[in-house]
Image 1 (cartoon, one colour):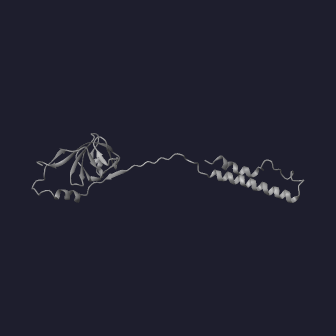
Image 2 (cartoon, rainbow, N blue to C red):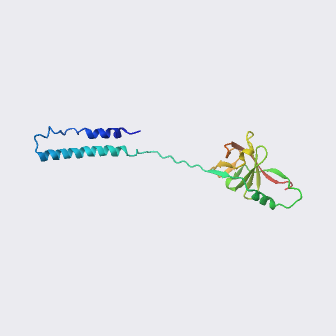
Image 3 (cartoon, rainbow, N blue to C red):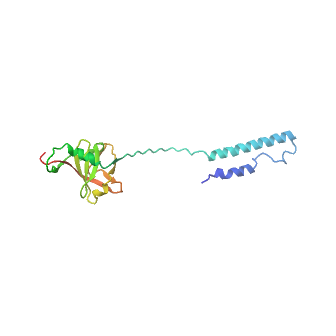
Length: 189
């Protein structure tokens, strides 16, 4: 919206400055003095107009600064070859090893998560860089299949993904809280 000064600037050109007479006041003066007075009046009027125009383009001074920083980490599904490499180091047995869940700490560093795979129901499989596999359960209303293309998580100050604190957001928009994490190990270990 234009400022009041911008609207009044053209009018200022039309109105002579107060205290300075028009041609009738200059009748008794010599021609040179009248011309000089008129030139001075025009310069003053031009200065007033210039000052008004400059004032319309000045940026108002702000005395408030707000800086916000937000880091969001994306965890993508792990490639099939990388998942096979994790299993390649296990001893070859005719039957696949049976995995069981074991209690673990409630937090995992986000930077240690190498990939994610959907499981059944509300379960996600997190593949860690140290070759561990973690079963992560989401809240009951969430489905793991919503996270088929990975998830986003807002990074906390401690840099960890924690149970009952962090929410995972799928690329499709689902927003689910992490309810439980268990490490998957071979039965008998």
